[in-house]
Length: 530
Ligand code: ADP
Ligand code: MG
Picture 1 (cartoon, protein in one colour):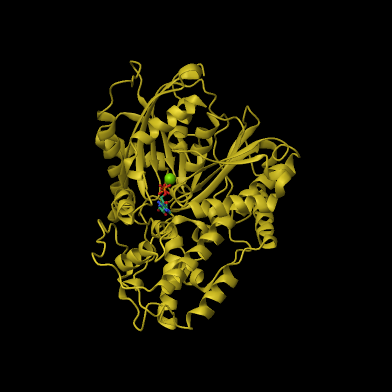
Picture 2 (cartoon, protein in one colour):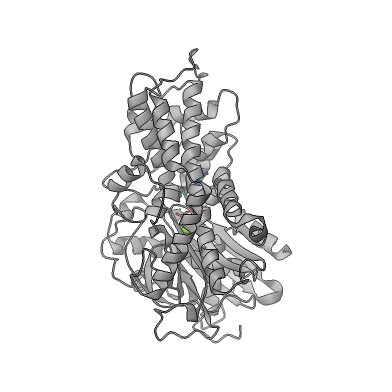
């Protein structure tokens, strides 16, 4: 545990950019501006990349004396709550459907919405890993580079350093070469600065664990074909190609002599990183821009498996659960957002529960309330019509406002949508946020129970009969306290007291970066005795 603390502080120390204080919105906006300089895009919409510093109004906002909001809002709210409701029977149904879809996806490729992708990660880190390793993490919003000096069982993580670069929006719509050249050049710059406690034995290349958070058909531990881009990426020329080859070619163009030893999904990296510290970790879930989950599966529970033998009898399966769609409570706002997206009909679970979309769903509800219920007065604020103008961090900031007159909510609405709001309107805005966030958190919780349930059905007692850890990561889970609470409460509600007391849902800070470098170590091309 003491060592874990050290890792947390060492990884946090360079992380000023992800520190989010909800005390003042300005602080948060400044903190976020580097992190989410690029918002993923949907459809042909152009999303403002960075609003930079938002001007707080210098005057005290007039809270209109009449706090009434038009009666037209009430029926919209009632219907929204009805359509978003997640009572226990619905959550149970979602959990059961998740478990059933997992089985169908394991039986045969294409057997369900869930791809159930084999990770080729058969051995998890033991703690004995030693040496200098790199990780490269391409998420939805940023890419991160990290180096870690591993010291084996005794010294564990001797040192880590990392850097984070936001992905320019034009690269999300550019060519594969442009994107990978950008990544390779970022990696080259980072690698140049190596020194201090980091040492590479002579005659070795630097090895990389490449975390790639998009659906990939893995062909070996160090190769995999991109199935399709998600989370608003529409880069041409990558789908159908080996993403490791794409990176290698870009590194060649940069004259950078590094090699990818492990290609891992971010969930797999998170599971490996968390397992390094805790043997009871069985599942990893990401809730960030998008969402996904992976878990430890027995080889003999994977009927579609052909040829691949794991010495441990186990392997990690990447569920790609963002594509799940069974039995979800959806509203007209979800359906409209989906129809306008670049991947209509796809990634429905992701569109209902993940960070890229929650703000946009709320915006759509508020727009209707403004247009049909005069929520913000007679006219509809123009900026509110801009897709993705309201972001999930904005919802979170508003929901942390404890002031009597909800002046943070007022400021955010003013800055984002150019509206002056009265207290009743602000309260309604918060109610809408809470409705969408509660649905998202509770459904995510039901998904987690689905995975645990599937594992328990296969070997009774393995999951609920002992301590089982679900490793969590991602900006949404980390920075949205209400979301996290709804998720955890739903897990308890579905499982009941007895079963849920063995289930630990734990945040693993930057687990996927460390995890990917650990997997680079355990899959090193060089001889090693760990
Ligand atoms: P990625 O998913 O791109 O790898 P992260 O895990 O850092 O990156 O998640 C970033 C996402 O997390 C953002 O797109 C946003 O949706 C969400 N997020 C970040 N900060 C907050 C916040 N303060 N409140 C709520 N959601 C947040
Ligand atoms: Mg990520």
